[in-house]
Image (cartoon, rainbow over all chains, first blue to last red; front, side, top):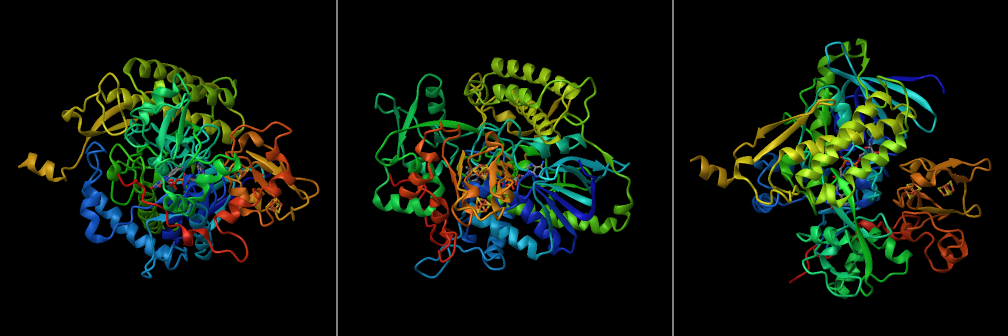
Length: 528
Length: 112
Ligand SMILES: Cc1cc2nc3c(=O)[nH]c(=O)nc-3n(C[C@H](O)[C@H](O)[C@H](O)COP(=O)(O)OP(=O)(O)OC[C@H]3O[C@@H](n4cnc5c(N)ncnc54)[C@H](O)[C@@H]3O)c2cc1C
Ligand code: SF4
Ligand code: SF4
């Protein structure tokens, strides 16, 4: 191992998916000296880069309807004021991406651009080039491992590891933006194996709270053998049993749990038989990566029935994450900001995102606010920021309290055994959640005391255990069904529980209700 | 999973080593990358997109393929047009139109 790389910056951004890229760009535009560190490579890493996304890009006159359309699905936990801000900010960012960012959107017959979606590789390579032009220093293959704090508890930088050089690094900074994505528990969902919930663990270790962690059981459709969890086109599918009969009730939207239930006992097949020739051709242009598994396995998805599975996407297409306490995406911990999937998306998505566009809009909007605020925070600190003596905040996986034993691979297998199965996480029931949580609590105690080794892998394993415990603690506390959180033992929605749910802690966990600001016509009617 | 690196096509530019999000490759002694950690491959196809000479192939399966599988055979992949097909699909490479320019998909909900 070589000597530690020691750097300073005004703003440190951890994670270079869309949220981190926008945060770094906006911090740099605000005059900050910015370092962006990514576990993988900024441009290819994260859910967006390989998947691509629809974007919640809505013309002003259509926004009222756009906001209203999702409130029932999301369990009425979103906030109109935040939705409106995100719609405004996303509209502005997409315009900037098309012009200064040079993203080549499709040009329609009337000469206008179609701006409601981005192809992942293209979007993120343009973002990378833009960051470089903007003077942001990018460290690839350099996962952050922990936050650094000053003696008052304010966040003062990060420490991490440059994996291709086997070199530890430390960046002292005036403010930190966490944009490390959600957690998909190494399920192989497209592009998501870098998303192991690291940022949520870092934030909790310095005292931040989480919110909406019960909304963490997104499962996506993929061909059985593959990683390609692109689900939108399955709206054109019919689902079948092995004997060729139709699986009644199964659908991509509001029928996915029927698929999960069937998969417990049998194989399930799909065929995109509702697509006519025009639609087929448009699909190929719209999402070339959707067809990779089919073309390479010589399957015609429009004519052949092919086996499917559901892969866990956890909080990547769930909505839970670090609680946002203010408009600037601050966390309540001085110097710490969050953006993208690491932050709760309930403010605009409530308890459901599904087929989305909201996620990408949230990533770029929250990135913009977090980056701008981080730059302002660092500027206010001035040169005192660099004189602070930082203390390491990382615990589980880095600094075991007992004798070192065990291996991160065993921990990962154990946490996957509690989170991947449909019976535990998707088709939720109190007794099964209780049992899974008890196992996870033990696993946490063990991990905290004994896990040590390859720092990146050990930290990822610890982060996943922490994530799973927050998820199930919140899922047990919400004794009703709302948004994507469905309890078989509490199938109804309980009007008295229309609040968000905070969860916090590392060893001992707690939950608390967090009221939703009145904002919809329904609330106003009730209030008057 | 990543299954093929063609030493004949590779120009040892290191792009795939840099671009792979999960750090699957190491640089070999001759400069041609080696698949050092196949088990970490997340089947995201990004290395293919970044390889300027279409020297890489990612099978769409999340488990490694057996030795004789045609998807590990360069000749077969060339003959079937699969080698380099993702890069072509997104319109990357000299003289191509970026696929994002043409990405007008269907309505997400089929007409009833
Ligand atoms: C298949 C698929 C399809 C989707 N389709 C849509 C859609 O149509 N519309 C929509 O709105 N949303 C969609 N989503 C969701 C969307 O992709 C995410 O919400 C979005 O990518 C979030 O951006 P992010 O920057 O927060 O996270 P990511 O894009 O996941 O990026 C996180 C980054 O953080 C890095 N990182 C992780 N840990 C560390 C660490 N410890 N240190 C440093 N860096 C770290 C990762 O390497 C990665 O680069 C889809 C997701 C998937 C998986
Ligand atoms: S498919 Fe993705 S994870 Fe696998 S080697 Fe290529 S870039 Fe790396
Ligand atoms: S990107 Fe292609 S040409 Fe460059 S090193 Fe990798 S395999 Fe070789």
